[in-house]
Image 1 (spheres, rainbow, N blue to C red):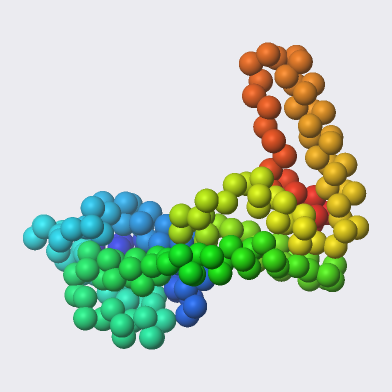
Image 2: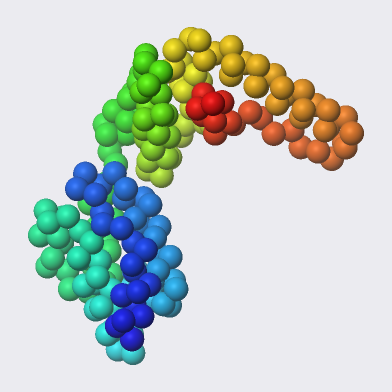
Length: 195
């Protein structure tokens, strides 16, 4: 039993010291718990039948935590208590922290072409985190933030790609009245800039 549980959790990386990969880490943990049919014990105490499984998972998860996080949550011996402590630690978002994140998202800029890939990655990561924390940022607003954050020589290319996309959507709509027009997404903007 233990070997198969350990194998299942091999896909879960270590949680980064700053918690930057929390949402991906959390999703992978949940998926692994679903795979071994103990996901319900993330929210409640395990039955005696599954207690050994949940103890093994608790130990595995503790091994994937940075030392300072492990020391803070080590007192929780049951999986559901450990999980609650980790969620509270990483998802506690106040109005102040959310506002700081949104300010960063909408004021970040990049002026060097060589820094663009990392800049785009950090914007998308920040956007995903803010959305996961419950921020109400539309995809349209995020698209505008991306465009405003890159040097102006990218704007012509983005406008051209957006125009082509719009024309393609209108053509599809004219050929099929049931076609739903899909707006130019932020992922398409990011892909255009990366070209």
